[in-house]
Length: 344
Ligand code: SAM
Ligand code: SF4
Ligand code: SF4
Image 1 (cartoon, rainbow, N blue to C red):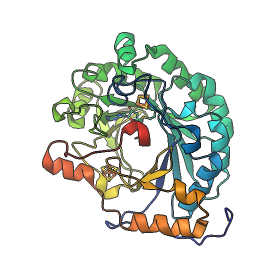
Image 2: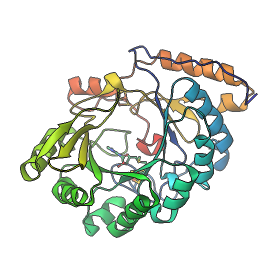
Image 3: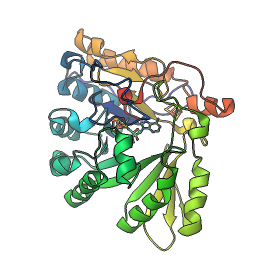
Image 4: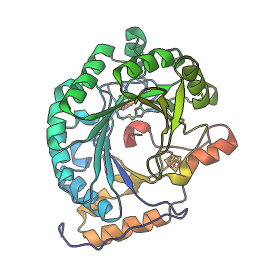
């Protein structure tokens, strides 16, 4: 049944957006407690994470990935929680690498375990890592990650990933009063290192982080701040649905990017589906509910039926939360899935 031939079923949603990217959360656990994502008060030592039997197995993930690739998905991103905490994640990467039609495999990580994993990840077939780092200041960074992890640990991970031949980008969430003072030091450091740094506007994902609009630093302000010191020029988008607006430091090949979900919503070109570690599929980062694929994977539903079901879900997709929020100018009151559940 698993290998049953399924026909190519490319699909667009209600707003004519194709399905191109699949983000797979491989675990809901994390070794950090970032205040904007998994605050310790909620994700404390007694918090019940998913038991193993509820996680999709690598075989189930491979099977689903094949089905998604048949529908036009070309890019796979592994995320979490912290994806490097999932035991033998390299085995999953090897399996995904063998799927014909997968053009790009990326992984988002907090970088704390990257020094150890970079080479095995590359050998398994991973193309790229996005490393999250919000500050170069040890005191602030260890407070923010809630576990006292030092900046040098992440920087070593980044260096090892580069040496291993992985593509590396760094993502920084900018939050007013918390990390806005880190923007220029981060820009200077990664310009010098020749590594793309992307600034992410603090988002109202989930309901745990107490988001307020006044905590958002608009990308335009960051761009102007950097441009005054290190002149920038715009770079053309590479493909439909490219999320980051890109700029290059004049006279160099080094780029920076802005992911401005709050002030410059990009829903009209959003081609991403998100799979939680327990096998629920979400059509939007800000979705209230996902749809259970795990029980269908386990109840004898065949590949063609699963494909048909996913096609049905995507073709009815109307999500455009960030655009709606933009016109509401504040977070929209609704229950939302937590970021650590579907991985950003
Ligand atoms: N643990 C991995 C990491 O931190 O890279 C992967 C999962 S994490 C949920 C994915 C990304 O979401 C990280 O870059 C993190 O900084 C970002 N993120 C988490 N909460 C956010 C929020 N409220 N607004 C913007 N970005 C957020
Ligand atoms: Fe963990 Fe990533 Fe969330 Fe931080 S942002 S708590 S590293 S999942
Ligand atoms: Fe995509 Fe939803 Fe984000 Fe809009 S709000 S870009 S639809 S994930």
